[in-house]
Length: 276
Length: 277
Image 1: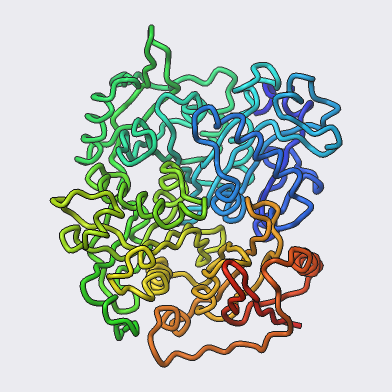
Image 2 (image 1 turned 30 degrees about the vertical axis):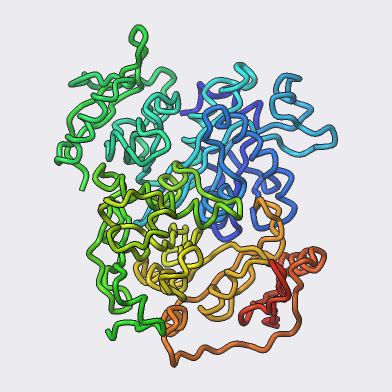
């Protein structure tokens, strides 16, 4: 399943951030990729501090330009303590000067430098998790790491959690949606949220199983079915209309990654059973 | 169940309990918490809830703003409303005093409900254990309303709505919120020095939730909880002592904060600690 991702597995090292209790429940060899004991960080232990500093820097670098970097207390309270982070990193000596500079690695730091992260929070109901954050250094320093790093971080993270249902929310125009849509269909819960910092945000959930995982990790995963309609992601009126349909009980799903369409981006949608 | 009756009658007269929760989460909630009944439900996925959710954001700013930890709106959604829930007490806008309307930036003709308190919690990987990450009350900002005890009652109702069996939380050694949290009974210290937090002098605690603990938290007279005698005290300005305690916790020692701290000055507390042997 991971043949196309060998450059990531060979060049980078997976890590986990989770409390000691949660670590005992994880699959720490997701899809056959082992997370070594020294790269399992417990946020409640002091020695994890320097690595968590680097992790916060990755969050600031990737989400800061969007005005959506997480305050450090929120990373701990809403992420690391109740939830979990999975990602890949490398030691400073194995990083390019460009990557070291982008991550502002202190000269005396010798530990793992995180280059990607997938953060998830538990939800009510067995096997349900909320994907809270997904990023890689490639977003701000193109080519600093192998492509496909976000997808691999998310896929292996979900396997480590033994997740069966994943919820998420993201800006419609975020490139993250392309990664999430590899796990399509994404059953929409909301398409326009006026009280959110960015109202053009969608909320969705999808099932995870071996078939979904295999399809998501195909090197050229594409929508499996013809869309019933293409949603223009910059068109607020279309988003509001879709939200109204969802509120009226009509079910819609994103069935594949959005595509650039001239000067706009469109997402493929198909009607599905409404979520309860 | 006999409805919880806080000592301050004003809290049970004129205020309306509310819940913010998704349709997926609501079936897990108890909407008759501690004998109260909640029918004011806001679905964060529905545009009709926008006005109330914006007022919740305002409550967060006016209560946490001065301490520098207000929540960005997207964290409210991603880190509260979607995975967990928000529980609190509200009042109709028309019943707010002028000071209240000013605090919330409301026009005199404003309608709908205004949240005066909120408790936010999200589930943890352990069923029944909830992470309480925000407790806010506008009572100190609106002394004319006489809502003393609002934060405690809000947290008690919230934990009951979430059917919590244990609660974990994070606060600072110099925070008066410890006086509220210790009403649940002894708080087990999970961390005493927390470099992962913006303020390393934060502690992580775990509390066992029982009916008696919730009623005591809600300030219902007549509740008694067992509390061990303190073995020593931590001065909230003594970071060395916190780090030493953290070393002992990481080595396997267990401690609790048995009761509320003693106030030594502004943001300066003496916090009792008991060893669990």
